[in-house]
Amino acid sequence: MPTYRDEVVVLRTHKLGEADRILTLLSRQHGKVRAVAKGVRRTSSRFGARLEPFMVADVQLYQGRSLDIVQQAESLGSYGSEIAVHYDRYTAASAMVEAADRLNEAEATPQQYLLLVGGLRALSRGDHAARSILDSYLLRAMSLSGWAPGLEDCTRCGATGPHDAFVAQLGGVVCADCAPAGAARIAPETGALLRSLIAGEWEAVDAGSAQASAAASGLIAAYAQWHLERGIRSLALVTNTGEAGL
Image (cartoon, rainbow, N blue to C red; front, side, top):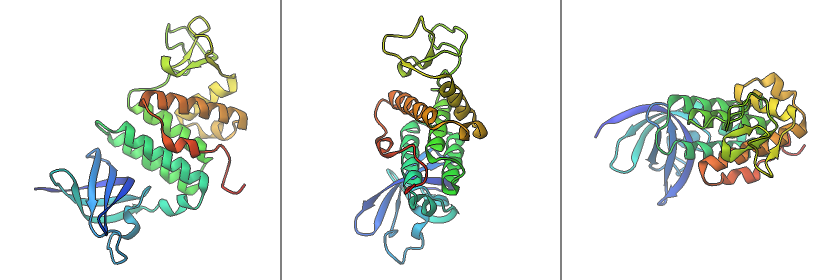
């Protein structure tokens, strides 16, 4: 059976036996991979902390029948330690890798890998508010998977926007004529913030008000979970506050 090498992000891990772990990895070239890291839970393991969640590594894997086997691992990004000590960063990262796991069930792309790595790097450095990084990631990852939300013109009839109603089931914003009863209404600032988040316009995102950020986060969470067809459990723990303890 062949061996292969790739760059990976560790999405999640499960204990196996006394010393091994099963890893779920998002790779740059081979999509989502499940592999066994033998002996990784021993203190003498040569892999150590390189294969913990949120870590980025260059790995060599042996292709097995059901699970591949990690043979080598070299760290490319030690983001886990900086993320884990901040509650808001940790919960945002947990939601990001959970979403990545769901979005890449069938076929992943290098763009999905690079987007996740960029998000985890930004979280580890505290470049922006953790919730904003998560929101931008969710919008862009959904777009890469073919579920880009409509944030300007009506997603139902195409009427020129912007519009002030948002319906996740209809794919984004809708005009007054198409909006069903009870549709969520969004303020102009919230709509502008949503467009900045998906475009990665961070100066505008960072300048957004707390109220607009909270409203945008709620809409993004509803949209992502509707299209993924099941909840992202980690989102329940994510807050819109700054660093933990503030």
